[in-house]
Amino acid sequence: MPGGRLTQQERQQIALGLADSLPYAEIARGLGRPTSTITREVMRNGGPTAYRANLAHRATERRAHRRRTAPARGPAAAPQPHGRDAEAVTEYEETFTTVLMGSGLPKIPARVLTCLFTSDTGSLTASGLAQRLQVSPASISKAITFLESQSLVRRERDEGRRDRYVVDGELFYQATIASARANDELVKTARQGVAVLGRDTPAAIRLENVARFLDFISESITRAAEQARAVLHTTSTSNDTNGSDPDQDPDSDADPDSDSDSDQDQDQDSD
Figure 1 (cartoon, rainbow, N blue to C red):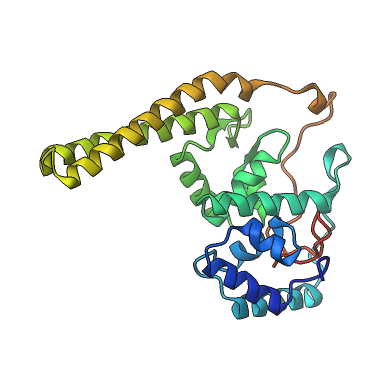
Figure 2 (cartoon, rainbow, N blue to C red; figure 1 turned 120 degrees about the horizontal axis):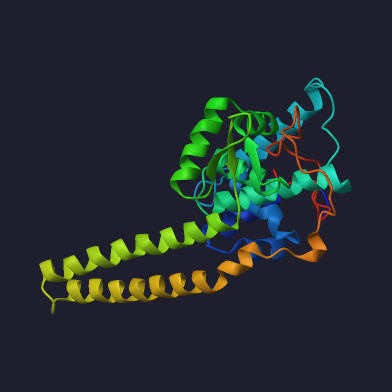
């Protein structure tokens, strides 16, 4: 049933598709499901190399049971700014987190980055992040340390001398340049290997080709990043907030890691 929960048979088909190295989009087409559903299903249950259909199905049943039996946990989530649909925002945050995890980020750093990017201010304190994500301050601290090491967030002091963690377009520029610099180190190391192994040997030729490839990529990335830098600071008039209040650090918020019963594409379960 395309609009209902994933069945055990569908999960078996997902496992077979992953075993055949099929892309998520192709698996989704075969099942008549949104690609985001397959992506979240796989990433929630071990990733493409560790996904097991039976284990995923049992985990889904356990999560569904917890939702039915869990007691109420305090007041409802605060209303979303700008008249946003709270359920749709939570679904989107979950999708964004899953995509970030698919790109290589660990789960908690991915959730922190999603939280910052979907905040209108683009910045939150450690306590604000812990409240939004319902995780410990220690988890936030570890996630921030990791994200700072990747140049994906920066730290600022607010008027109350609290640390605030910020994302903006400039950070993406810096992270891109840092990636190009990392390629430069690989180029240098590969060419050291050429000298060690003997320039005309098959191994040295292989390393030289890798060095030339990465050198070209690094130069292209740097040049493109410089040319596109202004795009990161462009404000679209269609996204103007018209003076609306920015986000505040919440006392409570919807947990973007919780399972939802519906998908933006009318899919009720991507567990």
